[in-house]
Length: 407
Image 1 (tube, rainbow, N blue to C red):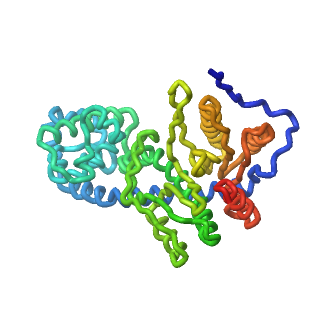
Image 2: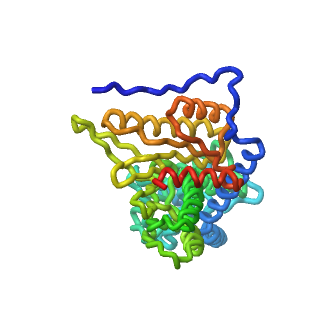
């Protein structure tokens, strides 16, 4: 059996020229600006979809009518330390207990409040599921919990919040900070996925428009996401398809109207089929077998295949807009590229042409990527910010991509 080659990162030689595709300071600023707008818009949409304002309004109403003496009498049953209640009382003005502490009756009356008190306790839905106290049915579907479950959840939330505020103290608005910071933390995985999805969708839109004008495009397979399913672990983030579809392309199709419609619903393109038999596939894992029937799984971000060859070209696309993360994105991409090369070698396939695309290419990454081009590992490298902003760079990119699908 052939031994697998490991392509280690090569040291950058002093004085190595910076390739032309490296990001300029202005390009980095523009990419960061676009990324900030995308992340901010995403957070606003999630907060709106979760109706955080509605939950806060319910808490405000409860806080105006709660029975202070009842909380003190039942503090042991509710899992609340009297010292924590004293902290709320000693604030000027005193802070209503329901801003921080949950009574099971609140959850029985308003099941979606589970989301509010879970976030005050800085807990994720994933971890609640992991400890056997799943809150999803009550948060998302408004299922009324049993008296026992409502009590158990209230005690768990309250015991955590007690310990936190005894250490960090309270302010009239800290409960809001706790809720929003925990939601923001949970949004991390979705934010990264969404930035990658948006970058990929933008690239594919240009390809669809270009190939449609040339008459090369036969069909478009896609999935619409619409809703955001999120948790605090990127690997556990679940993308839920609201709708899948297949558009058969004909000359009378209003392709731009189609693209506008699906992109407004967070489209994730799955496959473009061309009239010459080639297909461009996105985020599809494939398995190759060697002569001993050992399998190798690979999953490039994009790849093209013909009728005869199951991978003609493959590309890694990194849409992250943080210059500090550029090196890590390159590392992740090279690992995926190495897996493709190794799998092709041990299974007796020809190495496909390979490309790297990134929103930001800091100098170090650009120099290393150029070394890979010089060594014949990569066929091409694309600065996506420049591709999307420059007509000349866009034309070159579209010409290359059209060649990768057999035209």
